[in-house]
Amino acid sequence: MAADFKTAQNPSQPIMAVRGLTLRYARRGVFDARRSSVSALRDISLEMFAGRTLALVGPSGCGKTSLARCLVLLEQPSAGEIVYKGENLIEMKREHRKSVLREIHLIFQDSATALNPRLTVEDILAEPLLIHGLGATKEERRQRIQEVTAQVELPATWLNKRPLDLSGGQRQRVAIARSIMLQPRLLILDEALSALDLSTQGQIANLLRDLQDRHGLTYLFITHDLTMASAFASEIAVMDAGRVVRRDSPSKVFTANLHTNCETLAPDSPSRETVLAPLMPLGNDE
Image (cartoon, rainbow, N blue to C red; front, side, top):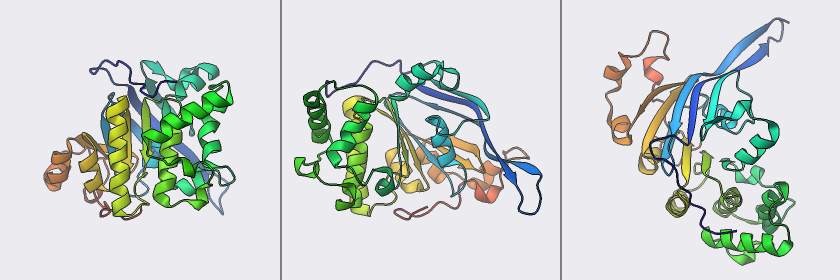
């Protein structure tokens, strides 16, 4: 497998387009058998373009993680479309969807729980290849692992360690290495930096930028941290109460006059006070 997997993509066409995405949960009261519906996502529409970073920001509980899980179909949307390279993921046949989802990878905030603690780092990195039937021989898998570990500056001495033997930043490097084993096109970073200290955040952010430049990766960078989003993304979408309430350049979102902008929201939009707040300071957990 080649180390550089950059492919041509029409820059005017989104690599992924989310259209009218809605996610509802059924809820039953403790003292009432009747069911009610709770909307986690409400008519979400977003576009992501190849080689660029879209940051998704908003307060805790606004639906960011629910959207991330929907994009890789860990949650089944109640309505809407998830169009990847012109095809609706939701309507694909199972085998075709499995092959397409190889190009989309979700990286979680807590690498300690996302990585199997019983496996060595080498086994963790080999696992995606085995699941998807790639790397027919052990030597081919080892060669791919060597290519990827070099890209994320992961020392060979780590390969025999287990996740709990590593620091948070080291585990996140392993998670990133695993995410690019299958040569993806889109990485969804769900609070992937928020559990790290400031120094490690900077190191991992620089690593992600380098990988993006090398491979033309597209990032959906999900965070509650507007400062980090402004530094990392080319565009920011703001979520509140399950909806996207604003989308603009980082400078405009960061410096916007919220009271003026909120006057333009529809009557059923979220409250004006929560359009951007509460966004946590740099480095705090959600």
